[in-house]
Length: 168
Length: 168
DNA sequence: GCCTGTTACATAACAAGTTATGGAAAAACA
DNA sequence: TGTTTTTCCATAACTTGTTATGTAACAGGC
Image 1: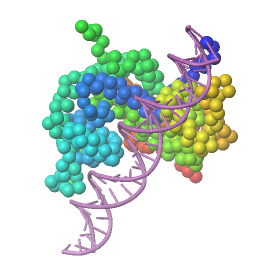
Image 2: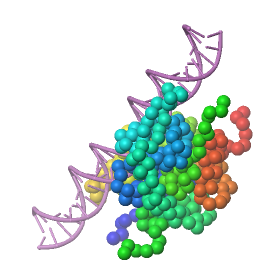
Image 3: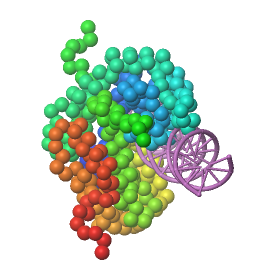
Image 4: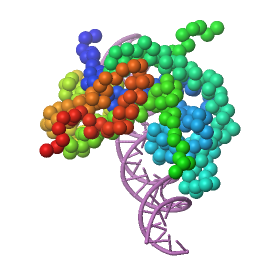
């Protein structure tokens, strides 16, 4: 046991030069962790689409364009997610009465139920887990990112945020 | 002009709950900005694959697995990028002499040339632009992210980091 | 010296984002 | 009112990440 090189994390080492890659990488890890927590909901809806449901819950019925703006992603990205959520019966897509170009998106009963159950449980868990991940961060941004990565490598998101009791 | 709702940024408003989405979103914007700066190189190599070249430049020839570790992405992701870089003539992939399962990846002459040119120019520009984007950040992480997003919305990455002189 | 198990990479299928483009409705204008 | 321009959304093609799985090479036990 001696020829195993141990490999530097180049993205981390390069600092600002690779900050974009690094943000994406952290984002993907967080979403994967979120997915594990959300799995308890036993729904077909993937984690990445909960922000859409949350947006409607928060702002009421939205058009496609408004939703793209609310979530900061491109319009085609929204359109595709909506078609999927529609197929899963979570949202309803109707042509606007005032403007025939716009489609108005709202939650179905099933969608509202899913949001309600999520808010009561897993959303709080996710927020708590991520908050715990980020607690007591200090120093410049790059160091904070390193801390987040180190913590995440040590304890996955799904094992965070319930600091209290072991299962009975 | 009165019926235009102005739409809240829901991902930002939800804070820790959507931190994964938010990291990915910022990462994508940074990479898009980086792409614009790198465009001056006039190469077919996409921005997302420069970290691979940088890794070899930094650490020397690497196996596929080592590279996945160095960049923090999955092995299939590395494999695909390598095939593309190989097709572009930037890297050379050889079967390891000691272990027939491993492939050893190194820079070709063209690859070394590209890295050399990049280091001399655009890499420094990217690092400077991102550093300028992140200068004087303070406060907790979520606030720093908001600041980054606000600044990026105001001035794109490609117009940063060269604070000095207008073109002659 | 095989058989078994493990390791390293490749391939396939999928996910979720992007840009570019097209079609239909609305708005502007003449 | 008819034409042109603009806006909104849908579709297509691509990028780059993922997980799951297959194959070939190495390593160990008998």
